[in-house]
Length: 104
Image (cartoon, rainbow, N blue to C red; front, side, top):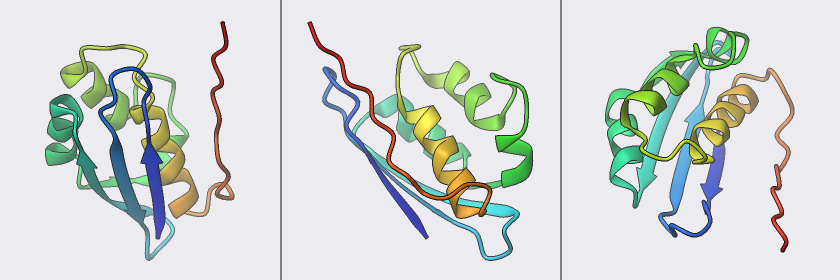
């Protein structure tokens, strides 16, 4: 099982994601978020085909379609984090932290 904690920055609405895949193909997803938009995604997104999600054109995955439907902020890092979790849970990539560092 893959666990992801997302601290999205200035909004402060943290999200915890769990993704599990028993067969390396189907990803089962649980999203716990302080953000109402991400909560809506979590209510609809329970299970996906990992291969289809990860190896589709940018913006055409179920994750990004739901983000487009619910998220009001296009720079939200949660959809990308969710796809990285699906990728790792299905064995399509090794789990590795992703960092975005913003300095002024």
